[in-house]
Image (cartoon, rainbow, N blue to C red; front, side, top):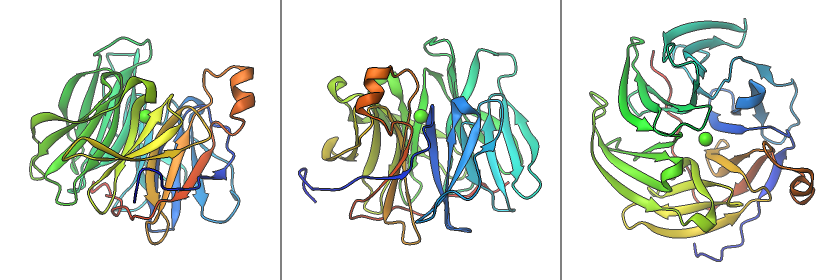
Length: 297
Ligand code: CA
C-alpha cells in the first residue's frame, strides 16, 4: 500500500447529517450504526440496501452507541450513559455524568477490549479544557481517566489491549497511553502522531488488523492511515466532504471502511461543492479492521 493508492470512496447513504459521528459495526445483525449528534438521532445502515426505517430519535445529543453483550445497545446522551432496547425503544439510565455542568455534552465513545464503555465530554460553548474522558465498567460505575480535555475524540486500542490511542481534537495530536485492561488505568502518555494544520484536525479514529491508525480529518477532506510506532503518515484517502468526523471498519469481513461526515456550519457555496456533506461514505481500503468491542454491562 503506497501513499498514491487509488482508493475510491463511495457514498453509502446520503443522510445529509448535521454532525454524523460514531460509526460502529454490529456483527450480530451485520449492520452499521452511527449517530447524528446535532439531530439527536441514530442511523442504521445495512450494506447494499437502502435504509428501511428512518433514523431513531434519541435525545438529548446521542453521541455514541455500542453493542451490548447482554443484548441491545448502550449509548451516551448529553448527561450520561444509557442502555437502549431497540425492540421496545426503551432507554434506561446506567450512570449520570456531569449533571452539574449543563454546558457540556458527551462526545465520542467506544468500548475497550475488556468491555468497559469509554466516552469523553466537551463544552458546547468552545470552552477549552472542560471535558473529561470517563470509563463505565460492567457494574455501571464511572471513573474519570483523562481530564482537561477540550474535544474528546478518537478512541482505539491495540489488538492486545495494552495501548490506548486518544485524540483531543484541538491539540492536533494522537496520543498513546499504556492501558491496563484489568483496571483501565492509563499511564505513560506520549505523542503517536501529529496532524499538520493544513490537513484539518484529527477527529474520530479506528485501528486496523496491522496495528495502523485510520484518522478522520475535520476540515481536511480525507481519512488517513498512520503508523503509531513511527508517527509516519502512510496514506491519504480523499473524501468528497470537508468535515470528515470518524471512521470504522465494517462488513462481514471487516474489510470496508465506513466514514461519517458533517454539514454543520457550511454555507450555500460550500455545500454546492460538497453536496453530500453529512453522508455516510464507504471504501475498500485493502486491509481489515478489528472486531467491535461490546459493552459488558
Ligand atoms: Ca468526533
